Length: 226
Image (cartoon, rainbow, N blue to C red):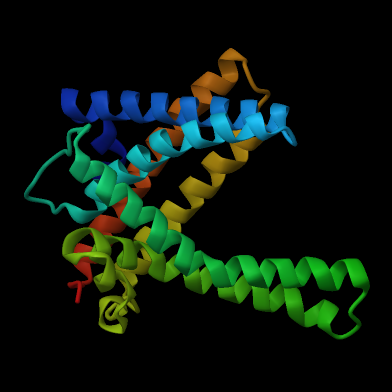
């Protein structure tokens, strides 16, 4: 499972082209957000911020297609179709809803730390960690369900069954480590440098590998969307 997933983004010309396009989409998104940050608080900052939405949604849509495939379909070619945009919107919406409790828990932790919350100072970080891990653990299954059967499927309790499985846990753990490492490296890199551009490619590659890993984990756990 591991070897196949790491080879997946380079398996054929369609997969390599998809990684290249995804890298370009990530780069455009980052440059647009950088421009928005430079213009803030001027209202003109909304223009590059809005321009960042399209590439981000297309990238999310491709990851959703990789997650929603199966071992019989082979590699997934990138598509500029309206279907990819719709799928990307589903991925973003489901991710936003499932990660909202984690964001709220982290915000609460920051509030407690800044205000010296006594006993809560011990409990809040632990609570935030548990909520974040739980949200991230079920998120891939919810995204896959939404991609296959529609947005409502991603929010059904039955779409989250059979996730207490060794194959899925292993795939999710490796995929999470890859994605978190990619985000950390990209955040630490200096912008507008060759190293940053190379890390954008690594970032896209790591996300595609992670999506393929989780897909294999879901298949091996015999998970089915509601």
